[in-house]
Length: 438
Image 1 (cartoon, rainbow, N blue to C red):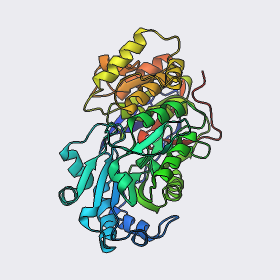
Image 2: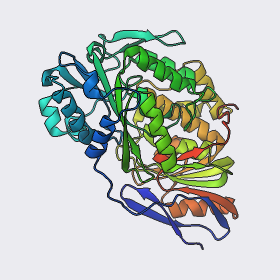
Image 3: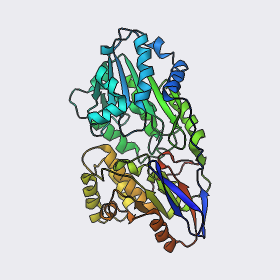
Image 4: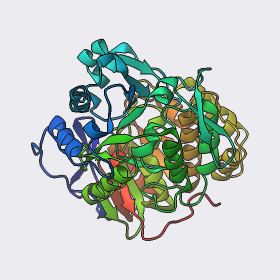
């Protein structure tokens, strides 16, 4: 047997040993913990050198209403440490507390508890400022433009009324937009359910709408177009290293700063894919919510593993899989579609909801069906039982070692890719493959 390898599971490492006839192709090597500059200091530095805009203090006027859009508690952005420098600059420019509203850009996600909000924005900020959570189904959303597909986009009234709109988020690989952050904080972050659905259903299966790619990505272009139409003035976005530590912050124009942060991100943890492997082992961290844990599976299944190969996923999911999602999988798999990937693509192209509720549920189902049609997926989790995993169309294993041993029976000799932190899995492809053609 070969040396021990590991995947991250929270702050802990879960180790496993590969069979002697397996060869590792890709495996990031993490540096030891380094004490970089505090997030607050990085934010101040970014605010002093914005990309594509004047300084925030020069853009804001004391009689302006300001909306600060922040991503939801499921995201890793340390908003509570970024807000003080941003708020400080606004206050120094003469903006009064009561003219500042912090809007949690939930998109179609569930509302956060007060405890989650305290952790996200900081207890003091929650007490001193107006903090609201966006409701994509509210009847007072304000129209700001139209999608190229025809639908009207309406946004949160606090954001629509504000003369200064600031977005705070993070740059992570994203399966459709290429990368998170940038204009996404506004669209879909504070948009209406109908336009989010139309956008996601239409563009997700389209060529170019893939992880790590923005240049010819129509999903991304529509996000930027709607951010421009709605008047997103300024963003502050975190850049991470391969261990999910904030190592830089970018600020300025929502597209200029975002693209600058993307290039920094690629240098930090991107890698050039040479050959796909027979087996990929990946942690779902930092994602721990049911629909979100599919995100690292997407590049692992569709980019780093050969068609017909195997993906072994280590996942935390303390709240379990939503019942509505599991029931949807039951309904789909009971019909025994000839090809689950083709079924998913056709459902999205016909704008057919596979489950009522949040769009991320539907996206998770889409990618689960597509990935399971390309590779064998085994899920290892202390939080999910075998029945729940099987209902997703995946195989179950009680441990990483058990999953490896099961796969060894099918592939005594194999190449393997190992990605200890899947949320930052960024294979840089030499050419864009058409991932959703079957």
